[in-house]
Length: 224
Image 1: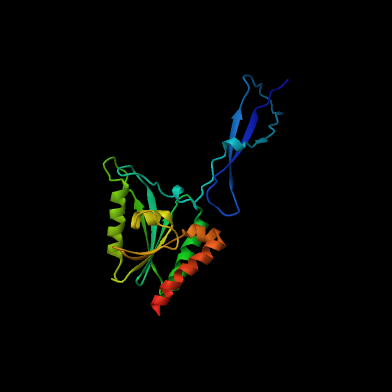
Image 2: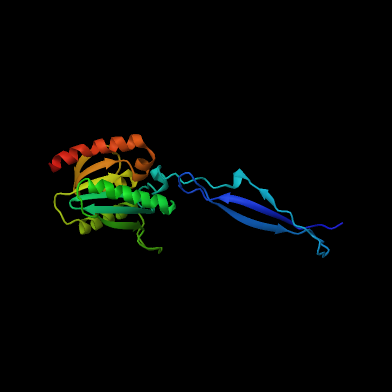
């Protein structure tokens, strides 16, 4: 009796923050019995094996802890920060490199539309990454990261009367520090600041988006 090789098709999914779709990746593993007599009549029957226990945890970008590490002094942190500037308005938002490019583009378009509320010109876009480079002696701690972000903002900003729209915990932590809630308005050494939800949260929650536009009303009145 012939013993055919068994092919196992293992389906796993890369659960990034992708709306309404998951593209499976298929990995084939072929195991042969100890003795397989050669025969042209051998037929290999594929068998699909799906194991939920092997699937990775999905990336939840609405939870800002997945975008940046909140660390004590001296502990290493890593993050990406998107900065959009239009006139004297600056919008900042944490970026998770693991999200789908389509979602990333939606966040960029949303930021552009927010900035057009204040100025019709096309905003300038920058993205900061921390740490600056991968080296054992490179600075990686949160206080140095905050100094770097604030220094770059001073380089980018050309106006004295600046308003920062700080979206999410990542932007908050490395621009003005923690312990603020959405809707808080305050003055800092960087300028007037509005603390609000992350762009990912605005995309996924109509309720948060409505609250966000209410937060903008005092800024629009100041423009009149």
